[in-house]
Length: 117
Image 1 (cartoon, rainbow, N blue to C red):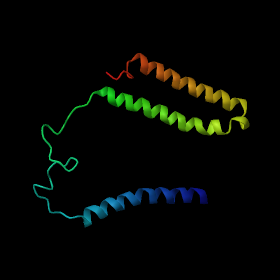
Image 2: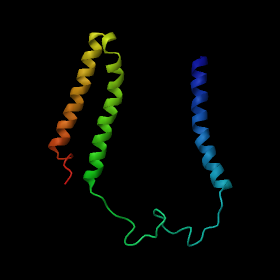
Image 3: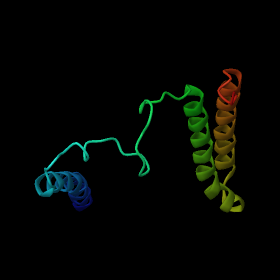
Image 4: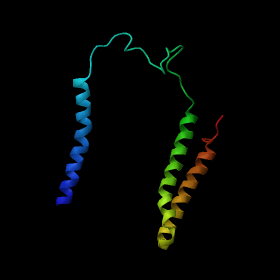
């Protein structure tokens, strides 16, 4: 039961710290807005033209595919480090994992999510 008490305590602390930080910022933060403080700030230069620019969705899709395969490498690194010590079922599971990700790559390729232009 002590393990569950520790998990519950960590859960409460994990919720309380961000809430306390947000409350402290709203209570202690300055509240003197003016036109200059509310103006759009971009790299220290005044903005010109429309401040909201739409990007192509393909940039986001390309980034998502990159993140997916970057995470794949994070999962495969421990497997590669302990390859000699793993039983056969672990190798089979890793091959299935790679095949699923390869299918996702083929799907993204056929949907033309990887084309830059």
